[in-house]
View 1 (tube, rainbow, N blue to C red):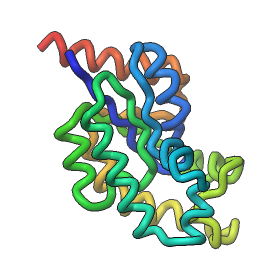
View 2 (view 1 turned 30 degrees about the horizontal axis):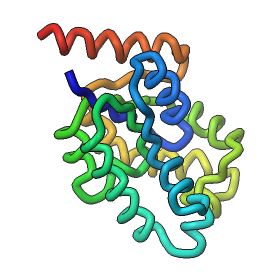
View 3 (view 1 turned 45 degrees about the vertical axis):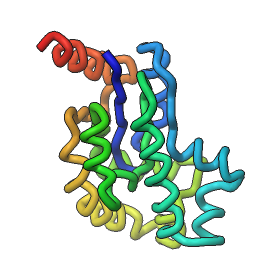
View 4 (view 1 turned 90 degrees about the horizontal axis):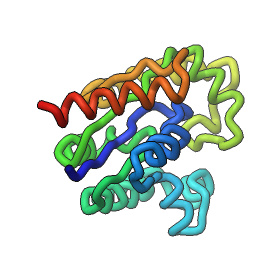
Length: 176
């Protein structure tokens, strides 16, 4: 059975890391939209946002997402905003199985504070306003994330446990 697994979630929710491990476990290829963007265009996403703008990025991101629909047996790590623009969520839902990596806001705040990669949408947010910004932003994006086929509460779960949950659900689906 041909399969495409789309990992959704807010910035710093672990989509890229999980994607690598899940792809390895399943023997699938990994298509990390942000990494492919940076490799193909030879520019970091923060630098791209500075030089161009978010709208230009979202157009290219959508084209990369469409590329994934022609891949077989692939784990796709989406960007945090990927499912929230254009008809991207519809594309994801039609093309494959989607997993939302859900985190509590305090955990996301801490992960983003410690992140080595700076996020363009948070670059001008003062430290004391970060939690409110994430709460508001996540509130807007949850409308999209919550439509995933599977929601995994990732806060206190090991990578192995998250992978087990995803693989378990996929096995049940293929048995039906």
